[in-house]
Image (cartoon, rainbow, N blue to C red; front, side, top):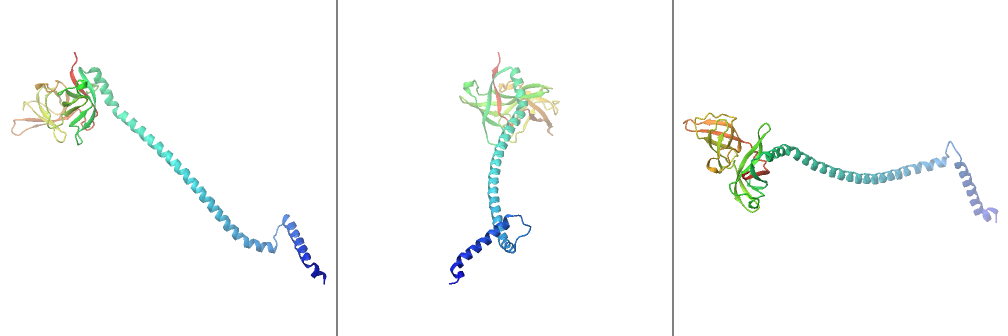
Length: 281
């Protein structure tokens, strides 16, 4: 038996081992050029490594996107909450600003009014845009009775605050009352013109306008004259401010002179009124 046949397997193992040791030694040191075998292997492995790397980067990017999306949603929810809070605060400030002038007039009227009154909030109204009939939150228990005049603080001239006529009480419950305003077509008011003392009757209409006529068709009344209650008939207290004349018309037959009034009250934005119960002692 030849030596190769007897020790061939061991010789092959030894040769491979020696070759591997040589390769390890060569690759462990710094080299400027790879071997032919390493170059072939590199060409085969590099595309695979690139593909695996791209997959890894894609998966990593997906997880990062999910994380970022979650963060964005949390930030958006927080921002929406802050915006809602700011909007609420803004509405509060706007309400204060809008009511500032009204509150100023109200405070002055409380100091100067010559009547006993009940301060009331409006809690209901008839359908439509106008407050021609409405319900207030005070009634007989507070001293309110049918026929009581209802007013609001208005500025007649610069810094001159008076009781502006809103209407009168027509129904009363223990804790509520119903008011008919001067713009209701069923409510007639006896008036006088401050400048000339000429009198007449006015009434409301379905479209919220206040019109009426003068008792004296020759009365020298013009646009801009101010009008107050006359007290005739005892329906309304005398000298409650109504508004000013915006138009005067004389009929062709010369038998009647009519007027149109602009009320001192904004009958589309009522929310609080005073009910006059009696005159102060």
